[in-house]
Image: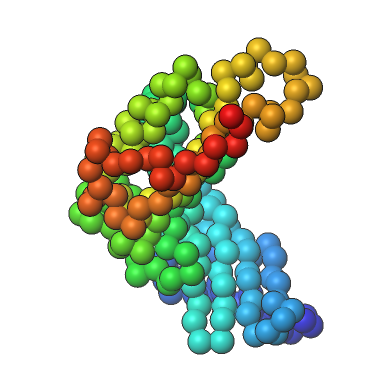
Length: 214
């Protein structure tokens, strides 16, 4: 990609953000897909109150960006974190993300709060993904999973994916050099197309459970 091509793509991304969100965009990096030679990713910061890091993806017949999912993930993270800490003896939160994948967002201009959008019914394409590492807590983790899922349902999410690695309580007192993976007992890969349709108290979570260590 030569200088003039990069300049053109950069200017196009800046104009796109201006037209879509009425905000300035400071570009930090432009890359071109080596396989297709037709898709560009432009990284930079939207000049809002948080100087939000955003990628603009330019394909031959569509331009999309990560602004809305970044804003909403950042807004959701403290709330989801507090729920995790309430419901589990948590080792680590590995990931919290709220995204509609590669679909182009319909939101433009001033982006509403994610909690307002959830209250009124979010686009069902949007999916909450959470990955956690928790302690077994003498078996109490199972109720913790149900409580956590009920909280997500109350927040009015639809698509939900929750991955939970459950570790033996002995890991807490294990020597520092111990391999944490040696203490992992179970993995849960929970996915709901629409959690609003699930009766969580009577839903069998064992179908999502993989026993890693007996």
